[in-house]
Image 1 (cartoon, rainbow, N blue to C red):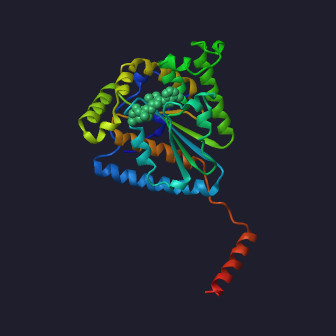
Image 2: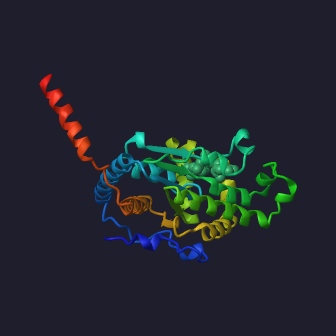
Length: 291
Ligand code: ATP
Ligand code: MG
């Protein structure tokens, strides 16, 4: 089945009601074997595009993954990027900030981890947590030590959306292409995955009581996500809302979006000047002579 990746792209400036976005769709694959075939093809294509990105050394690419717990961020990152040369790719998982990170403005810790030109950077969670988990838990905001007059609980989120949008526009103007994914999971499927994490000993480590507590705040997260996705969807870096109840399908969608974005950069290997070609020929002759 051919997919139109635009179907998963939220139009910038539009209000977002997550209920209207599917968490499950007709799969793009016919069987698990077919899924593997499709993924391998994508992984190979992505690998070629990444080599080109690295060689041309002009653009940087940043993939941002946000989602509720157990939506499959880790698996999507692992599978989609499985063919990419590790030298050209860096993945960061952002957890609760350290004491040092909390001493800085909320964009500081992620800024230090931005990809350099020619690289793919992956943020598994990101500065977006600062308008999601921090909004759902105002006690985290209160502990951040901001000047009291700046912690107006109504104004602060708008201010942060604006900071994020301006920051992303700045990155775009400077050659970083940002591709944002919200893996959209249903509450029922999260329950199923949590049960699996409890029932399967090898998955026990993935489950914590904290996950259960956050699940209890599901509706607050939905509201925070809806506001955030609407306020920070930009023409230059829109949000992709990926149906995530089927992990395999979600991975195929993510890989197509990344591939199309990289192709859109119309990258090419650095061209060789006549002088350089002459130089290479000369070196070649020398090497050949020495056997
Ligand atoms: P999984 O989906 O497998 O559970 P995860 O990304 O939730 O993976 P965890 O180690 O379970 O990884 O959780 C990381 C936690 O760190 C999340 O609950 C997230 O909300 C929290 N976190 C990330 N950034 C911040 C932040 N800036 N402030 C407060 N909490 C944060
Ligand atoms: Mg978690």
